[in-house]
Amino acid sequence: MVGSKKHSTEEETQETPRFQQKTLTAPAPFADETSCQCQAPHEKLTIAQARRGTPVDRPVRVYADGIFDLFHAGHARALMQAKTLFPNSYLLVGVCSDDLTHKFKGFTVMNETERYEALRHCRYVDEVIRDAPWTLTPEFLEKHKIDFVAHDDIPYSSAGSDDVYKHIKEAGMFVPTQRTEGISTSDIITRIVRDYDVYARRNLQRGYTAKELNVSFINEKKYRFQNQVDKMKEKVKNVEEKSKEFVYKVEEKSHDLIQKWEEKSREFIGNFLELFGPDGAWPSIACDSTASPAAKLEASYPPCPGGAAGHSDLALPM
Image (cartoon, rainbow, N blue to C red; front, side, top):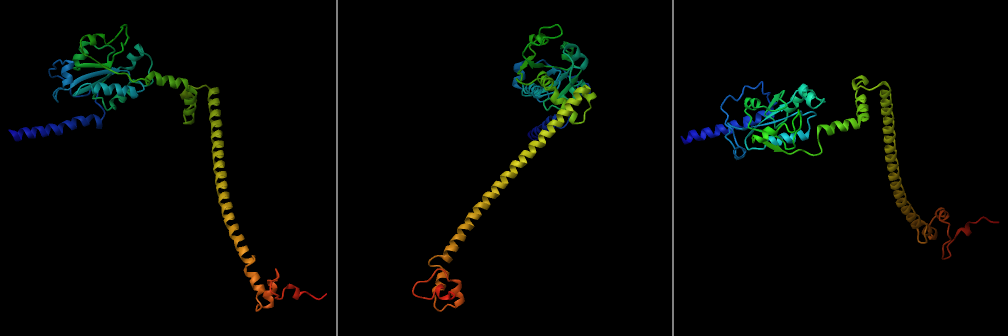
């Protein structure tokens, strides 16, 4: 029995990583395509029980929903919190369709298919529910065996209600997450609208047509002209930088040449003084009585002391 128990433990240890790895190596499945429809009895959990931990085969089923347009770090952090609320959890994420979103919230940048796919590739998501309802019904919660609903605690007023999660909170099924300040879909859209000209010019440069960008003929010409001006400015800037670099190199080489010249000139002066100074080689030759007349002629200046023949002896008769 001991050996059997050990073998069983090893199997569980090996099975668990494979289950966890599924989300990391493949997109999360869609709820309507997965074979697991949670037909087994599902006992209701309290938050205290869920926080203590549940058996491996009974993860806490946490649900989070939203529009998730322009999926960003704020969305991912909210889902990370929902996934890590309990030691053993399974995160289902509901994404509302285009029709429902446009009706209650407004137009989206990404269509529903793009938003579904963005959620499937988030590492914290175990399952995606497409065409999620705007307001959660008991039937929906029962169908997906949802234990708790995760969302930030700010009342969400919509569809004629002051807070669409009010009945979830009253049922003790609500667990709050924290919003990430400084990032939201609305913030991103605001940046794009504010810097519209910049992004329009950018996309024209990348090959998009004015029609695709919904840019008028006049604005297209203006943006293209501005792009040409920017290119010229960039070229001038590059030329200036290269010129500065060239001048710096010339100055550096000039400094080296001057330094070498100074060193050579000192050496030249030293050699000159050694050769022509009072005790130099040439005066010594001129003073030598055994030196040839030619050598004396070459060393005729200055006259040598001691009565030796100097240049006056070689002067032509008048």
